[in-house]
Length: 395
Image (cartoon, rainbow, N blue to C red):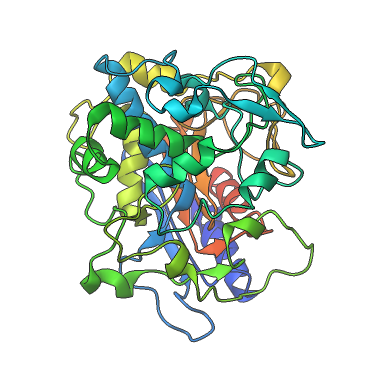
């Protein structure tokens, strides 16, 4: 089969999701050797009204905010203002005496403190309210910690008022840890997160559409949201065919017009082209012009697995990630013998709750970004798109 036919499979796969009305719009870009290799889009900003996608659509990227905050922490580590072994309670005293809650609701003192390294690797004992069968997450769900009107400091205070799901360091569980980390960065630097992130990463990378809000003149470019009504229900898989249900309340949960809403674990808006710059920076530690923002040694440390075999496979609720470990900024493929889709040793990256995804593959000199806007998708859009990309490799 000719190379062009294999490459066409990427667009064909994306269009198949649009044709069955499982997603409204999908955009993708894959670079190899620093140059754009594959890119395209399919669908609409709102398929129900046939509202077209903007020339450069803007997406709510949810947890793809996390790697930016994590690498910001590593920059402060390089400057000696933060250490992986620092106790979180040194910066946020409310975490000085954490408790662990059991399945029966009983509590006991945690066996040790939460460290900065635990926050970066999601081994802090913190949780998420949408994770099923987690007693700590169930307690989170009884609060309004995710309300957009809360400041980051107020959100973290609510997190600290709740018990942990397990002793710090003893397990891996996806969590609000990066929100807590973001608050630590504010305390350490004396600046708010948006200002710190803009000066240290967004401006040096030349990002023009990545921020915690969107200017009024650009809000028409924001892709409309479909899927579950909020984060609480994104792990409630029904097994029924996925439908395009418009999320009318998304601006209340994830506002584009607020000057006081920011988080460490979500909250950023971005575009495929902007996030490609982010992904390339995460792949190298450098800007497009070659300026090093992160040292070679720190960059290597960032993408080294830190999760022991006893705490694998990683799980996002019912979803397992076999073959993956976790570094200081995201997942890292360590065992392709357990991988369930096409990949390489050292492939790394992360994803967002609204069907955004990126990967970095050093072995193939490849970086990919796929974006849509569907909260709680039951379909493997990212996996299928990535497989379509890998099968097109011919050298």
